[in-house]
Amino acid sequence: MIDQKNFPPVEEVLDAYQSLQEDYAVAMARIKELESAQSPAVPVMGEPVAWLINSPPRHVHLSKSTEVGLNGATQEPLYLAPTTSITAQELDALRKDAERYRWLREQHWSEAEICVVTNPKDAIKLGYYCPSSVRLDSAIDAAIAQGKGA
Image 1 (tube, one colour):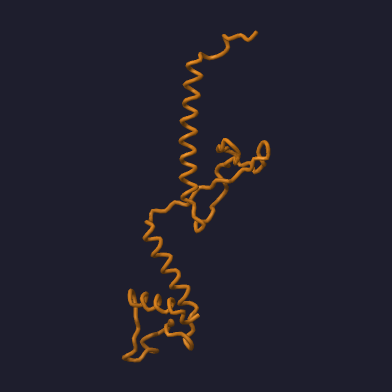
Image 2: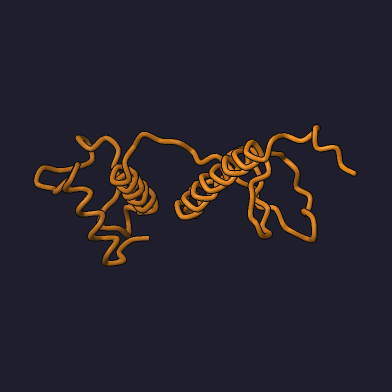
């Protein structure tokens, strides 16, 4: 016979179970949020902070184990996403600037319509068009779109 004096009251067990269900729901919502926000452009940084066990019910295992779970369940590493204070628009602008710079680096003076010149006061003659700032961006974008240069 089981001695029921060593067990907590039923209400206490039910409250604890309800609390665990709520915590589970919050964790699963966060996992779905993180999964939908993942971008292949975001690099993985550092060691995994937890493992997602891919077998029903899915749950997070807070260890650095890479072992296969019970019944062949696989474990997927979860990483911290790099944090940034810049907006998506600022990030897109930085990517576009990087694309322009990489393209411009590949241009050779003997073949391209746009290239970099050192000592422009000595190398450029009066009357030459030397775009800068927004006009340079526009000229590079147009050349990239036309497939000119490298």
